[in-house]
Amino acid sequence: MPLSYSRRWPMRQLIAASSVILLVACAEKPTAADAQPLPVTPAAPVITTSAVSTDMPTIQPAQSFSEWQANFRVQALNAGVSPQVFDNAFAGVTPDMSVIKADRSQPEFSRPVWEYLDGALSPLRVRNGQRLLEQNAELLTRIEQRYGVDRQALVSVWGMESNFGSFQGNKSVIRSLATLAYEGRRPEFAQSQLIAALKIIQEGDITAEKMLGSWAGAMGQTQFIPTTYETHAVDFDGDGRRDIWNSSADALASTAHYLQSSGWKQGQPWGFEVQLPTGFDYALADGSVRKSVSEWQKLGVTLPAGAQAPTGTQELSATLLLPAGYRGPAFLVLDNFRAILRYNNSSSYALAVGLLSQRFNGGGTILGDWPKDDLPLSRSERIELQTLLTQRNYDAGNPDGIIGANTRKAIRSAQQAFGWPADGYPSHKLLERLRSQ
Image (cartoon, rainbow, N blue to C red; front, top):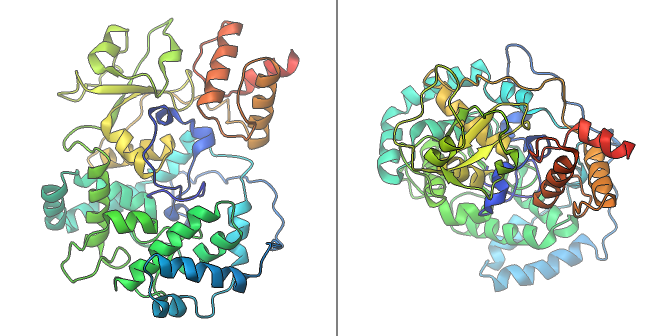
């Protein structure tokens, strides 16, 4: 899902190296396919979210929607949108209160990474992906030859984003983006997406009525936001239109085009599971720390018993990922993992895509144990943790509940002061220790 909003579908941007180790507990980004329950064996636990009023929110902007629309029309026309396209697209459009509610909602609880992966790697999704790999073999061969992106990865993204095209979102992209541009938290971004959406309509790829997607404006079988569509969508089936809604060929080739531009290396793995030695310096598990696989091995990083390192990886640049802290499984992740992160800036998502692509061929099994006795901190607990860290002179930055680089650095400093493994992971143990001080 080429990113948008801090949404369920985040905004597509090139990502700083430090983002590789975004903590799963705080960075889970549900995809369009997550909105459609998949049969899972065993059934995935119910996700708990903060209590939100069922009443639709009220809005009190400084201007009416019609006034905003008139002003935005001038901006769109100056950007090259024709008056007819604008007026047709906005005919009868009013703010969508459900979009505002979704934009304002912030879940209190996140699924642990192991529960997220249970849903993402469901047996049904694996079987459907295997079937589609076989059915689309000729198409995927041509896409691989053109863009150099492995077919298993493309089908994995397809499955994660829309359950292989079966759930793409059913909201009007124009109405959703207009609502967010009028009232949302990031109006400038929404306006840029809205202008791009209008240009897509103007170019004849789709009509306004058929331009459907997520509440945040992500579209099609692989959930592109409009600006990403403009730069990377392709007409691979040769019908004269870039149709990521109805043409699997266009959707998959467009995704390959984007991953190619994000640095995908054909034939290379996304990463692999490793084991860390006793006394390992867990502060090295940071997105800004890159070493070759052979350098990690010199530090005592080994493969699980019975596992073999992918061939040709010894000198590849790798980052150490601990998605559940030092007590959980560890992974060395490579350039292709970073390319997936550019598609969706969540380590849980990138891990799921990588593992699902391997499941299609019978792999993708994690051998390490998850620390299931330590659930992720809730949003309010993360805010409390940040506040307490700063009060104890560990600068965690703005207490917003997002575990970013500043907070991870503060956590490591506190962990080191306590003589604990400095993995930068926000745990209940750390929160309780800070509370007791």
